[in-house]
Image (cartoon, rainbow, N blue to C red; front, side):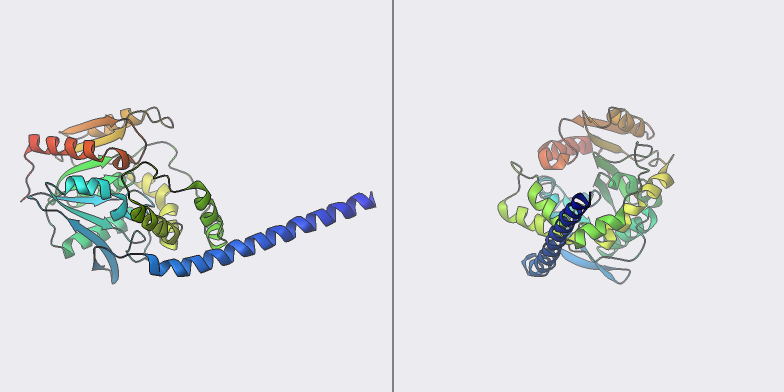
Length: 316
């Protein structure tokens, strides 16, 4: 029995040593890589001052109607992520991509990531650009923020277009995320290790090698940052606060949504009910995954252009 105990202690000690050496290695590699990658990140767009911090925005194309693009939660570089859609929309519109704090090239912030704060900051950025009449278009959680935004600034928003957007009352949004554990995993280099093994998931999509490399660099920098983790913490309360809220009844609403959501069979019904709360609501199902703008940018742009033309949206 003593031999077995000694053997177990030796084996346990060896495993502990291997783990300690491994974690030391991943931590050092992560720290060195993070520092060297700073110089490889290419800048784009322009910055505006919001609450004393720099928020990055990208403006592309020309047209009578402005379209403001907002990203889904955790998108490392919104401007690069939206590139396929921007190239389509910019043929007929001026497109403004707002990178909220903690996203893309924007600064981080210690201001709580409540819906109220996020909405106010985005509006400040647009005011700095003198953008005061526009179509708001957003992906994923931007749909939740857009409800507050369009009610608060109803006189500015001509319409809202959602790309597989979140809706109040969708299931499983009361999760308490282990943000402390995730922060530790990033600092230990484990997130970088897992991401490297998993790949970027962009194979076969309309991104060139340079863009894919840049998106990877931004992901390493921005994912699980303090600002990112604070927004993750507030997902539960932001959804709770949005319960029962709706877009303004007179706001035209166009929602592109994944046709067959395996994780939520009621996904289209949720969006249909959401669209029914306004006087002019349309839902267009598309086959694909959550990032529809990666794979269906032409269909989204063409569908929006036709929908917009039928309504002669006011750009003034």
